[in-house]
Image (cartoon, rainbow, N blue to C red):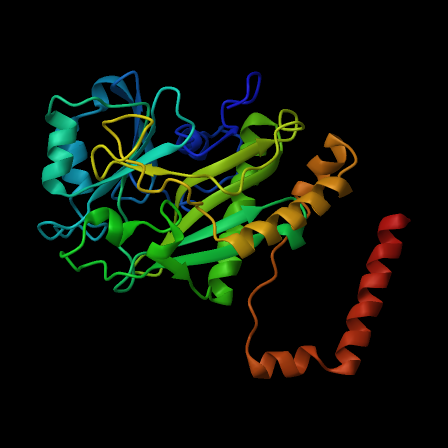
Length: 353
């Protein structure tokens, strides 16, 4: 994070993201049930600082101090959200943190035994966050990435799917679970359904609105990661890059955040205790990264002032997905298009008046 920036602004590991999702005011009309975040524990100075947990009523609750119990954390993360016990050896949580003097964050995955050792064993807990693993809706792990900008045309939604079967125990947990956190040869691009794209864009806009309602600062750029579970619910996992309007003028958005993985000992020159499994790789595939940078450069050039950017943030309403051939036939009708253009012209004249 650049000196003098907002606490939420940064690249790679942003532990404070969950705090701003939870943060609210009594006068806010924000619905806590819209943004769904898995149970997350934020670590600072080797101790759990905050625990954001999803209650049985579906509310996103924050616990601090004596309310943080490691036994309850282990029990909560080893249960599905339908209250069923996770199978033995299955991934239950993942941990992202930063090493001192290293820009690339490190990613680790835990099963039940590994999580028990991490919570109650004599291990070093770096500054970062521990998050409950959301099981995929299919046989392979899939993560959705959204590159958001105030310009509606600059919102790019992509998806990567791991090439290995998630339940194949012949491979390590890291190889079966990594998508954007790992090298590109472990995953591949996948198709994003139109209704999922619409939901992801809507959730991005809801977080931007919520952040402005609580901190009164508009977001300039952000990269969020989502996941769809077996109940077709969309979860927000983490933010890999964030820029604030009043702080991020000289700090461009980083679309290619690189990650490390503690997997094979002695493979990295940075720290002999941590391996650079993802050394030289990018978290984003090349064509989307280059295309996204061009779009964001055009959007940044179009911005004239923070006040104008603040107004543009909240005028974006994502269009619903296509209704299929029947709906497209109706929308492509010449008389229908003429009528819609006439209505838009009347509305524009009324606004100017």
